[in-house]
Image 1: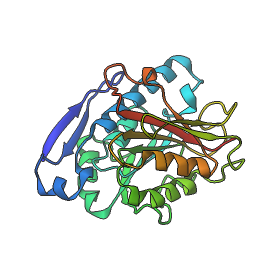
Image 2: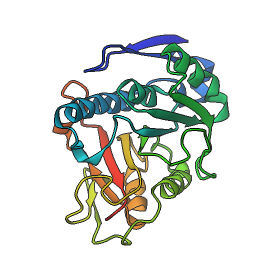
Image 3: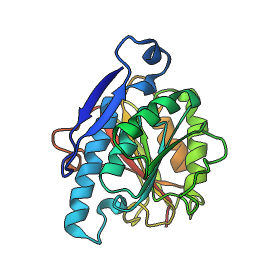
Image 4: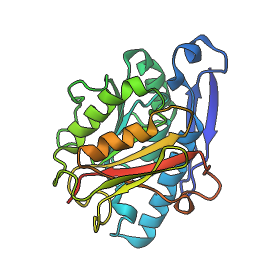
Length: 256
């Protein structure tokens, strides 16, 4: 194992992440045991949102809550994104992944002294939603980083998001999925929809790295077909030092 320190703009302490070394058996068996670039892009976007929110309270940029939020991270791996959310002001964070990653997640919770506000529980996509103390009222924000890379897993993942988001509030409402750049989704949006979260339910932030045949377009289409609002965050809204043409961030929410 190696340790990575991630500086968070606007935060007085760095994020400490234990991760698998390149070539280790853990990494060979599970891509979730390392911090990938899409996670770093999403972490720095969260930090930028938090700085904007601190300056514009009570307004929320793009309707994405963070300060005081109840946060769920799916496929957390090392837990880096969810732990960053906690350091940036989330009230409670629940990290979820497969059972064999619970040790790594709890190690990183302890390394950041966040045991009072962050918990880790095993969860398989498509199953009943995780049940944990402190989250009985549901979640305000759901985080996904680099989970859309294996088309076979997209059905269970979309199923979990549908359970979290609840009713679509309009069965599409004129939403259309536009595709560009060789089939990768550019955006899907309903007219006059406003910011994320405006339709009720949690906001969802999804960071994906565009790779060959990853199923990103399929993932977006599946959400749009269920009537959810999906919008790509423009690159200029991400952190200037932490963005890449091949890493996209989407906001997903229920329609009004």
